[in-house]
Amino acid sequence: MTAYELAKEKYAKYGVDVEAAINTLKNAPVSLHCWQGDDVIGFDHEGPLTGGIQTTGNYPGKATTPEQLLADMDKAMSLCPGKKKLNVHACYAIFPQGEFVDRDKLEPKHFKKWVDFAKERGMGIDFNPTFFSHPKVKDGLTLSSPDKETRDFWIEHGKACIRISEYFAKETGIPCVMNIWTGDGYKDIPADRMGPRQRYKESIEAILSEPFDKNLVKPCVESKVFGIGVESYTAGSAEFTLSFAATHDGCLPLMDNGHYHPTEVVSDKIPALLCFYPEIALHITRGVRWDSDHVLLLDDETKEIAKEIVRNDALDRVYMALDYFDASINRISAWVVGFRSWQKALLMALCTPNALLKDLQDKGEFSKLMVVSEEVKMLPFGEIWEHYCETEGVVAGAEWFDEIVKYETEVLAKR
Ligand code: RNT
Ligand code: ZN
Image 1 (cartoon, helix red, strand yellow):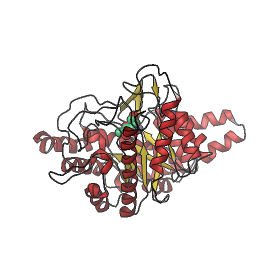
Image 2 (image 1 turned 180 degrees about the horizontal axis):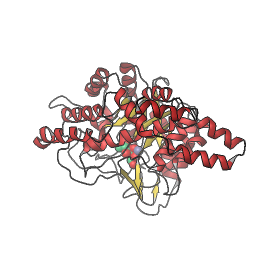
Image 3 (image 1 turned 30 degrees about the vertical axis):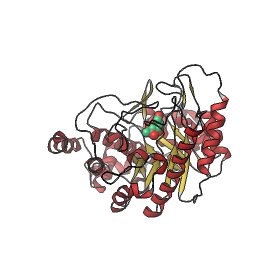
Image 4 (image 1 turned 180 degrees about the vertical axis):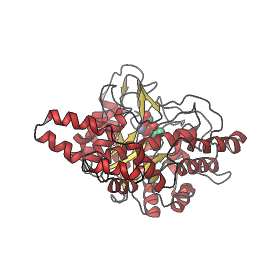
């Protein structure tokens, strides 16, 4: 008997079907964010990243052209098991030499290279209007600005992004999740908290008035508790976005687990939302003390988030996307560590005897529930992970990093 077969038997004793778990995971898409590859810069402007988010670090070799970024993503994905989807920001438009249009005038053709890339690999694409790093961000505000011209520019951008999202969905045959996040807010105590939110609401409504097929485009609103430079107030707070999504048909709430007070956990919010929303979306990240967007690891809350999706049978109701950006380490390894960590968390959740544990809870057998929960943690998960990686054609151990070192020497170091 192989080590894998022995491990599988141990799981079976708890009623867990490991093969079924692996097959389920193979069909659950996870969106890989293009912006880890170039520190959230994109191709449509020269300047730095501004607007309530920040990268730190200056590790050499970052991608500065579409060709480099696509090659780097390819490398990262080749080292990850599981089903992938691309997550693209509008600032990653690819213009032919010498051509440029501003964000309110973007068209599907500016993303054709992304579509070609995705189609060749059988992947879908998620999309994000980019409401930051742009001169039209006025006093830190976009869709909630008191200035009508500013709002109108960004509404036009949002509408253009809906058209592009629909194009992605039609081309790939896979629905496109389009996430609206802005850094709109104030550094210091606002004199008016409702005005900006009222304008934000009307602006998002104007964007969503662009006609689209709800089966193809899944617009989301992402909340945030604060951002760099907007520490005192954000227009798109948790209550704002949740209420917006609840009252606008076809609009999903998106929770980024870096966007809450440090003792709040998204794992507990997922089942609450699933009682009301047919579908929700997530940005999976790791905050260290604050919304620091560190690389995702297999830590307790990551495992807990995966558990809530899996044990509520909601893999087809929760759109999962990674969202972090570390410029201080090899960016490709950052992608891979995060993606693999999330795969591990999902596989662990799928290999947990969820039905048994729920039953113990419902019967009020809390002593046994605690005992079994703790013993289950000792099951030989490593063997299952190794087998899963093998069937996906990627290495299970840390040797994948050798590939990164090779790529760094042969490709990144020459940039
Ligand atoms: C920022 C939000 C947002 C961004 C991306 C780049 O705090 O998390 O999702 O990270 O849109
Ligand atoms: Zn996010």
